[in-house]
Image (cartoon, rainbow, N blue to C red; front, side, top):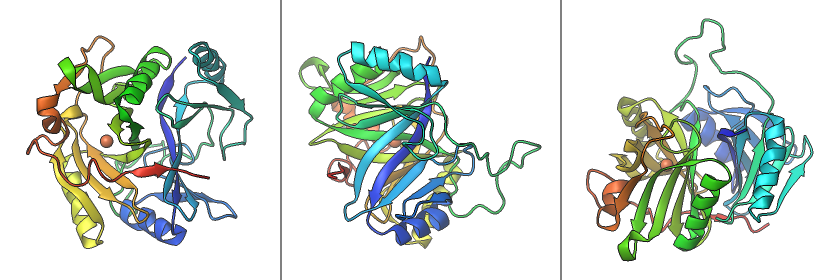
Length: 314
Ligand SMILES: [Fe+2]
């Protein structure tokens, strides 16, 4: 039983044509499905399931939900029982309710975000195939990240964050890889970085003024790819929030930037370290909070605390 990885992020966007152009030509994702209402389903070249991003035309730029993939369909029943036993309502939606997916286990996390778990999604394969593959697709455009790596969700204050982090550890079997602790004797988590694999984080929660999405993050190999990505952003007049930097947390190499509807994205590079079940949780203290987030300067940068995606209102 278990959650393997992030599956997709579902966002409302303001201008679907601009969204398509941006994600195809600058980010280098491909459109794998387009619904009659204009909804786009896109993927990165190194992903094999049908899509990892959903963009719905809307008059608001907001967050709908995030989905994670489990190993097998029966995991959904086991997880439903565990979630309900914990005191959180959960429901199974029939196959096809979410495009290209099998049964969905839907619940609202203590962070107030809708989560969908699924075991099956239409397989399309990597752009490089699975027979004597090239190391990367020669015809891919733009930044061309490997895959959607993680999302960072914002909670309304540290109490919601701590409830969510506890739930993800105790019910969904995530490991707390890193945390930023503030307040009296560090008793409040201001951020939590949780892993369900061997990577430093598959999801992060950041305490803020209200629930929302802080960013969605795409994986690149290393620092030279981060520099190249920033070059492409410069050539394309992409609004960069934080120029290439290293996170103290996760040791990741990063750029924060905004896509056309104002959703913050990240290109994240580097393995960081391997999370093993017995790895001790890394704690960043309040006096080194910003060192944890932006290691070189140790100072707040960009609009980290003031810009984020609001929750969908409809
Ligand atoms: Fe991130």
